[in-house]
Image (cartoon, rainbow, N blue to C red):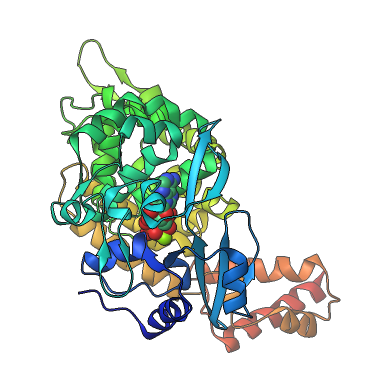
Length: 453
Ligand code: ATP
Ligand code: MG
C-alpha cells in the first residue's frame, strides 16, 4: 500500500484527532499508487479537508491563510511547507477560465468531482483510498480519462485540453477514446487560455518522457495548428529530393529530432523541435532537376522563433538561448576548418551553449535517420575542447593590463586594451607562446619601437 513520510502522517493525524477529515489528493496519490517515490517538495503534496480555514488556523498557530482558494499553508520546518485546501465545489463557469464562485463543499466526493482526470481524483486518508471514478483502474490500464462528461469538463476549463496531453506524455498513458474525441471537438476553446498557462503545459510536454508523442497528439487533435501554426505547416513540406539524405517531411523530422534530443534541458529540446521551422517559407523545388532547397532557412527560422518566444512570454534568457541555437544550428563540421574558425564558432554561440549545440546537432542527425555521429563530428568535438585550452579570450593571457601599463608607462585607457588585444591576436595565430617571459619581452620591445619614433 501507500507509504507516507512521517511529516505527512503527523499532519493527517493532527486533523483526525480533532475530528476533521483530511485526505492526500491529486498528483501525490496518483504518483504513489503508480509506484513512484513520495514527492520531495512540499508543493507537490495536496491535501483536502472538511475543516474551513479558520478551523485549520486554530489547529496550527503557525499556519497562514493568504488566498481566495481556501488554501492554508502549514510550515513543517523552514524549507517544507504543506498546503491544505478546504473541500471545494465549483459552479457557474462564466468565461471558462475562472470558476466564478468558489464555495466550500460538504463532502470529499463533491471535491473529487471537480478534479480533471480520474487518476487525479483519488483520495487517501492514511489507511485507504477513496476512488469514486475508478482512477486506480485507469492508472493500471494507463489511461487518461476525464472525470464525468468530457465535453462539459473541457468547456469549463480549456487548460484541461493541454493537461490531458501533458499527463499522457509524462506518464506514457493513452487518452481514453471519449476523452480524446472530446478533446478534438473542443480544441478551439484553447483560445480562452492565456499564453503563459499554455506555455507552462507545452514546456512540461516538451520536457516529459514522451515529448514527440505529445506534439504529434497535439497535431492530430488540431491544437498544434492553434498554438504553433509555424510548426504545424511543416508537416506539409517535403524534403525528399535527389542527392539529399532526408527521409522525412520537415514536421516529422522536427518531431524526430525532439524525440532523439539527448538533453533534458527544455529550451534545447524546444530548439530541436523548432530548428528547421524556417524551411516552410524557404522551400524551393527546381523544376528541371527536382532538387529541393531551403536557402537561408536558419535566418527565417531565427525570426520565427523570436516571434514564438514572445508569444509564449519566454524569459529573456530562454529566448536568447533558443534564438542562438536556431540561428547557428547549421554550423559546419569540417577537418579543413582553421582553429580560428572553430574559435569564431564558439564565440558566436557562447561557451555556455556549446554542449546544447552539440546535443542539437545529435538530435538533428538522428532525427533525419543518420548515424548518431561521424568521424568528422567526433574530430570537431575534440577540436572544440582543444581550442578552448589555449588562451581563448584576452583575459586568459598570462599578462594583464597592469603589466602593459607598468612596462609601457601608460595610464589606464583604451590603449591598454588595444595592446592586449593585438598581443592576444599574435598568441591566437601561434606567433608567440602564452607564457609570461615571451609576452613581457614582447611588451618591452614595444617600448623600444616607441622610443625609435
Ligand atoms: P503535477 O504537480 O505533477 O503537475 P498534479 O496532478 O499534482 O501534477 P497540479 O496542477 O499540481 O497537478 O494539481 C493538483 C490537483 O488539482 C490535480 O491532481 C487535480 O486533481 C486538480 N487540478 C489541477 N488543475 C486542475 C484543473 N484545471 N481542473 C481540474 N482539476 C485540476
Ligand atoms: Mg502538483
